[in-house]
Amino acid sequence: MTEINVCISCDDNYSKYASVVIASILYNALEDDFLHCYILDGKISSENKTKMLSLEKIKPCKIEFVEVDESKLEVYKQVNTHEYITLPTYYRLILSELLPDVEKIIYLDCDTVVNTSLKDLFETDLENNIIAGVLDARVKHKKRWKNSKYINAGMVVFDLEKIRNEKIEQKFVEYTKNNSDKIEAGDQDIINYTLERRIKILTDEWNVQVSGFASRTSFTRHPKIIHYIGYYKPWVFGSCTFFKDLYFKYLQMTPWALTEEEQKYWYDENKKASRINFWKKRPLCFLNPKYWYAFYCSYIKH
Image 1 (tube, rainbow, N blue to C red):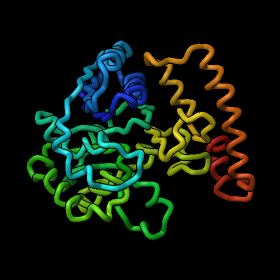
Image 2: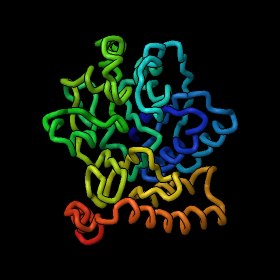
Image 3: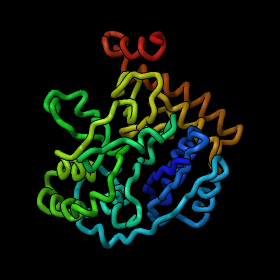
């Protein structure tokens, strides 16, 4: 049996979305995979904790809530960045302290879904690196990032033993104190710029970042992990997010499963609104070669 450590950070408002991530992991796990899911607890209600623990019925696993002393995150409260980046996002910067007995872990954001066993990812040889991840969308699409090893922090494999031994968490603090006015992407910037020479780059399929039909970091038809980046998440009515059907598939495995009436709203009416919004925002998309390449990869290429 392979024990796989996974970590998700959320507050009460995001407990439903975190549950979708866990459901997707358990549904796609191999028979011999044993998942130990650590949830960094940003004041989740007892009611929602009970709901989250019920996910153990999908596949035998261990779901454990980890209390966080937010006084240890004071320095990160000074960072001015996107409004959707909340304090629980910074919990991962003290992971090695929160989980002193864990040597290695996969961290996932709440806006992801997993479509395969995490065994191969967890067993990735980090060599002399401290973390592993997939290049961020900005690296893929902007020339000025061409040679960067800047990863997207929606999925990160952490070597917590190295982080403890090399006192990396203190380096996160030092970087933040010295660069708080330059940080644009919260903890993602802090992780990348502190560890820029100790990052292993993984293939795109392990974090396919999606914000629209042609706005994907990979056009693979078989993404291993999907990360719904940007504001328009699958749970935003009328969003044009590609692969959002998978979000609703895994949602139905959780205590937040939609009723028949809700399914009509979120499946039929939502899809109709999504198509209308897509053509309103991109009426000339068919003139863009990238649109046709995305179309070819998504519906024609085998």
